[in-house]
Length: 243
Image 1 (tube, rainbow, N blue to C red):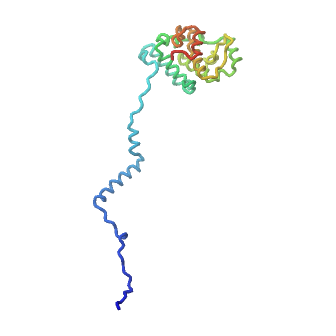
Image 2 (tube, rainbow, N blue to C red):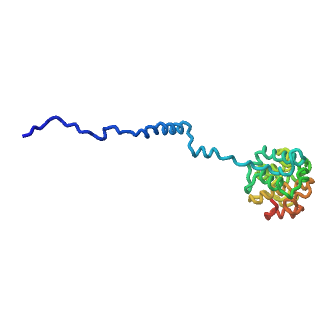
Image 3 (spheres, rainbow, N blue to C red):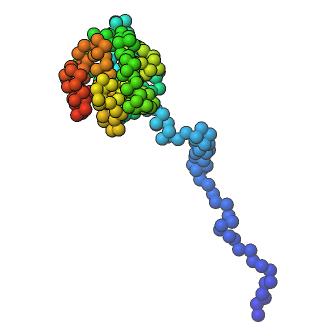
């Protein structure tokens, strides 16, 4: 009978044997670790780097800059108007039918080929007295629309008129409270329009017609195609105009 050995036999376990690492893999590990550490340290990946390398969007051209250089009379007038628009919150924060006072003024007046340089210069020299409503007209305005000076369309219109003339917005609002109202204090029709389309056209028509009345001839025709107050108002009301 053969003898049974009671001592345990030690079996080799392949999993316990350390795996041999190829020299090439060992050489690659430090470089890979360095790259991971670099990304982790800077928190920047290749996608972010690519986006940062993109060129910035081109600056938008200044409305009316094509009219003349900064040393010309019209160029100085345009620069002053644009500067006043940029510094007036009401010219940029109130939007009516997709337009701010700044965008509408820039498109319909400063960049319009129908508005002449002479008209730009003329509107820059209009005094407050030439625009002010009479006391009777003011009284009728406040009776019809007591909160008129708080309306966005009034502030919108005042912002355009102030930019063009250089008159202080507060003084302009006090002197011409009917700016932005549809109709006129001298007629039975005077109200605050509800629709934004009518509000925007009213704001622009008040701008052109009040300046026409103050001596800037041809401004209604430049924007609406006709010069008279009533006909230009009709064109404005039906959505016409060159803007």
